[in-house]
Image (cartoon, rainbow, N blue to C red; front, side, top):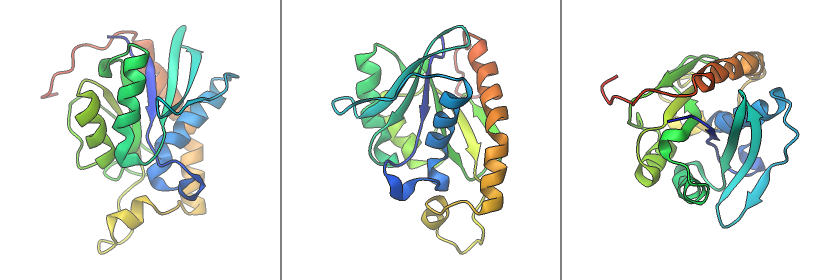
Length: 190
């Protein structure tokens, strides 16, 4: 199945801007700028998503940002995918990951949320089969720190500089994934 739906997870609203949990949305916004797309974000309250259709890697792709809270991302994606006649197997889901070092990215083809509640909601509503593009935000700064405080916290200046310094290489990595045109069937054990 061709990958042509790139989704960035995050929480909607200015309060959550530049938090670790919103790195998926930040990345999708950067993709749109770095591929020089002048397509505006469209909003559709019925579909509960912001989206833009762009020419990328020689074909039409969609950049999608679900509206609302991260942990309810699947609702909008379910509606959006149905409306545009796409499947979960067309989707690359870009989200934060505390197990991936800050600035790194890990591509995962197997199902499962690894405890990420936004991914859990997407799995429960649209099913498995999507590729996870896991953007590293690094572990909690202190073991006793509440995980919620970590993911909803803002990056320090040096951490933000690290993220910003990696955005173009992340886009390149995503392009390599998209350029494959077809992704082999996802084996749950791989």
